[in-house]
Image 1 (cartoon, one colour):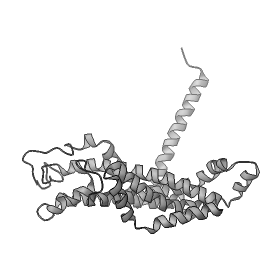
Image 2: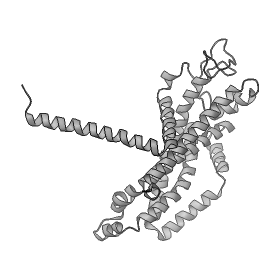
Image 3: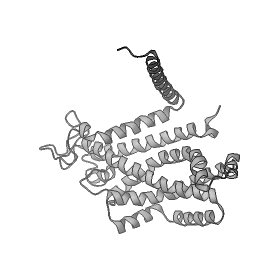
Image 4: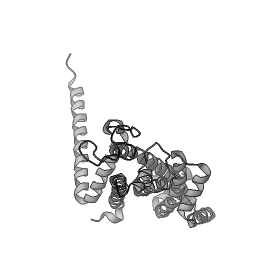
Length: 303
């Protein structure tokens, strides 16, 4: 039986709206790439990292701990793209699986740390007064200690492991990001619509959730994106020192620390490729974060 004409018109309208939205999204990505080429390169690097982390089993030709017979210290070539290490493991496969470690630690740490930072920064900037003074003095005291000493002390008590590394790094992320979020909140609460919402009888929770949080979300996104590169670099440094992800799980920092230092002169590719991976990822997140800051911040958007 033929469909009613109204149903066909409604379906055509929805299809047209969907194609128009897709076209607008593609045009927006094109404008972003033209205006912020470094940001677009950073986005490509980040997207590649996410694909490697999500599909490591299909991308890597070997398991990260698989020992290949008669393949010890093979240089890069057609058979092994990045060469092999001192125990006959494929370095390319370990780099791919190491992306999963970096993505897990980086995103979970930033998510947890910025959740705490947003809670501290928004409440501190909104309520102000004695609460703000007390909270900010605690943040000052926490930031006064050297970061490396705090992390090593926490990991010495908690022990090595992915969860403990995430918890230790989250505390430091929260301390620094809360200051930026508090500054954005202080500028938001001075707007007339905040006073109008209070005059209409809105409570503190409603004002924060409906008016303050949406206006500081851009700041939180930018802080999170820029902080991801620093977190991944910190995790690599901890793994290099032996306090990060324990073996046999591959971490780019531990690959640099162990056989990378031992065979630096006889097999330099063992240390070169993890170093290149760390540098590219940190560069990608920093460039993407800077571009998002310019796009999302009205004061930097220009005409």
